[in-house]
Length: 270
Image (cartoon, rainbow, N blue to C red; front, side):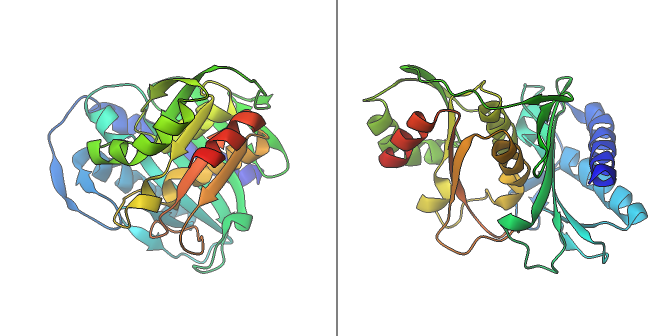
């Protein structure tokens, strides 16, 4: 997987370079494409980088806006070129390029087929990656998710819109009976999962897909983070009403925590 890791870092770096020119520019909204929500000029720039890079390398890939491009490669790249587009457009923190790599099974890829995950935090000099059975790394240094039991917790929510926040209200009410919660909404699922894996967040919970079949978030949002969580030995569970495939059309929810006791309490509160 070392060659695939090099490819992923190279691609993410190219996306970062091109996206930088558009950070802080809110104009350029276009129509909805693919499986995602609105596509903006900054998204189109990032998608173009992906298309050109994967085309030259002969890499099969999937993005939220373009769907699947099959080039008969042994691996599938599941790419979210910019996770946190609205943050980037307003020059706010927390946006990244997220790339998960799985064995190519011609559209039937499942969680067990994930081999690698990379999350490049584009507004910081910080990068996370994990290779299956080889551990999780931050800026090249291996780490394990800390096991901390605390009464005051930093809790990330997958709630980038007002109605999504309302979906989490019953859960927040239940978990707040046990913990004093400092709520964080970063508008980037991939980064939030990395923050849990590294102990920056105590937990991240996204229950939107369980409440709303039209929700945007899918496997492209969390796949890379899931590999990093798993290799960091963090606690997580993916929730879905349907069979889970590595496809943006597969809408999923997730609960995660760096403490096993906190994870258990979160699970009992959902």
